[in-house]
Amino acid sequence: MDNPVRDYAWGSRDQLARFLQRVPSGRPEAELWIGAHDGDPSALPDGRRLNDVIAAEPDPVLGSRVRDAFGERLPYLMKVLAVDQPLSLQVHPSSERARLGHRHEDGEGIPVDAGHRNYKDRWHKPELVFALSRFEGLAGFRDVATSAAMLRLLKVGWADRVADRLEQGPAPEALRAVVTETLALEGRPLSRLLRDVGDAARHAGARAAREQGKHPTHRRGPAALLPEAARTFTRVGELVTAYPRDPGVLVTLLLNNVVLAPGEAMFVNAGVVHAYLEGLGVEIMASSDNVLRAGLTPKHMDVPELLRITSFAPIAPPRWDPAERTRDFCRLEPPVTEFSLTVGRTPLRRVPPTGPRTILVLEGSVTVALRDASTPPVTATRGQSVFVTHADGPVELTGDARVAIGSVPV
Image 1 (cartoon, helix red, strand yellow):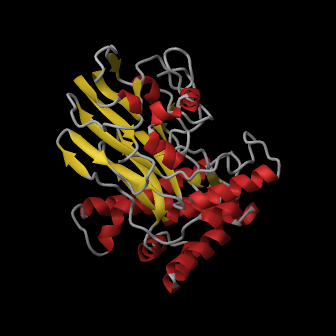
Image 2 (cartoon, helix red, strand yellow):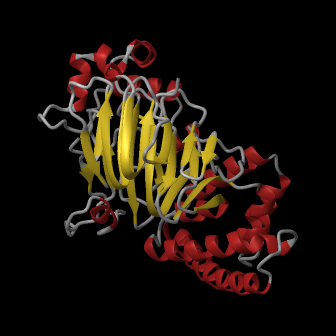
Image 3 (cartoon, helix red, strand yellow):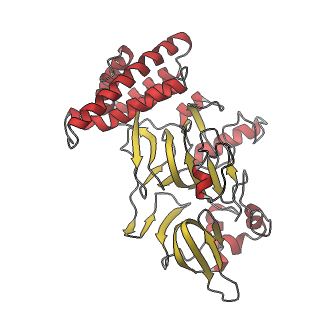
């Protein structure tokens, strides 16, 4: 397939180009879209768009099981993310909220492509990121006791007051109140606070990094805070420099800092506040483009709506372990019905046998052969993708390659 590239400002100038084995464009290239979303569908070799092919022949492409569950649409979207600068601080809606919001904005006559529209479609957008390089992000509210202890390391009056609020609990109510009040800050008081927090974070981050060097193996007591404190404070210092009048920077102090090694994954469900910071990864999600933003972006922000759909319950860092793993194979099945992800090296025999499947080559060269011998096999190299329909049946993958396969779980 021919897959479109999105040139967002947070993208890398060279990572995606290297992955696609071509010369960099000179622009920040952020996302490779691989799928049938109406906003930017992939194209087949004959020039037809994948969403149009599905609309014309839904049963052979999707299969009756997928069509009955999700309608005449591919329920997942794959991407390759090349993150060089932080994405916006954002939340995705639940299915119910997406339907209500989409219907309301349709009733208001807001064009789907309007910059201030929140709900561009009727679908939720849970997402899984599989790291191809070191991948760092912020995701979900951290345990409040840990956040309070970290905030006190800053030795700033505002941070101490927030720590007091968090310790008084209950956690979701305290977090909602703190985040609501923080995002309402503006003007000179906000600028002064960000300057003070930024200076304190840079000093506290350096101090935590030095202390971590003295206690590299400690897993309990105050020393256990040091790795996340060092990363969080260093990042906040950078964000204050980039966004000196953005209250969303302060909210990042309350979020889990998640660092994935290549081959690790995280899953972000509806209502979870998150922002990816850097790295290259494969993302698979329910096919939607609904995003509510609260900071770290020049794009449209709707803070009241974001607060309405956000879950303020603290969660552990949302890493996602494979349902099955061997040395050269893993199968990731998050708790959603739209997608699963299989990653492995060829020759790969355990390929999802039914439904629509998307094969993305991560390394090397793979040959995709259908059961029907009258159809010639297709060979693809790194950065290329092959779409397999339900009617194609089981496929065989051979060659010397590593691939990621998006599919609908059985």
